[in-house]
Length: 153
Image (cartoon, rainbow, N blue to C red; front, top):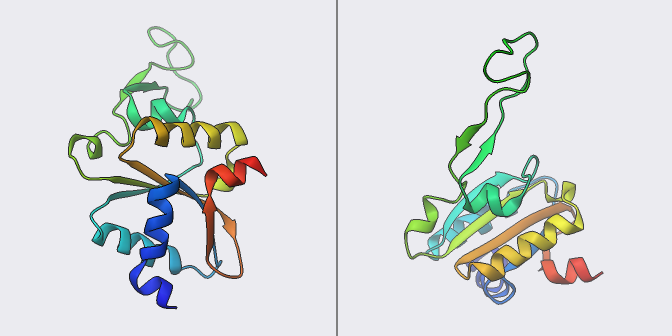
C-alpha cells in the first residue's frame, strides 16, 4: 500500500510515457486515490468516459459540431430529419488556457479500438502538457503500463 500513499511512482511513469493504460481492481477506490494524488501534484485533472469519444482530437481540443439525437417525428423544414448541427466547445478547452499540466482520465477505455488508442497517444505527443490515463479493464491488483507498450503487443 505505500505506493498509493505518495503516488510518486505512478506520476513518474506517467510523465515519462505521456499516456498510461491502467488496470484497476473491480471494487474500485485505487484509481480515485491516484487521481487525488495527481491533483495534489499540480495537475488539472478531468475524468470522462471513453464511450462516444468519436474523433479524439476534435472532441478534446477543437470546436466541433454534433447533431441532437433523433426523437421521432420532427419538422423537416429547416434541419431535415437529422437535425441542425450544434457547435460544442472542446472538452479540454478551459484546461488548456493555463500553464499547469493537464491529466485526462478516461474510464471504460476497453471500448476503444487500437487506432483510437494510437490517436490518443499521438495527441499526448502533440500537446506536451497533456497526460492521459486510460482505464483498460479490471485486474486483481492495481497495475499500469505505457499505452505504447499495450499497442505494440
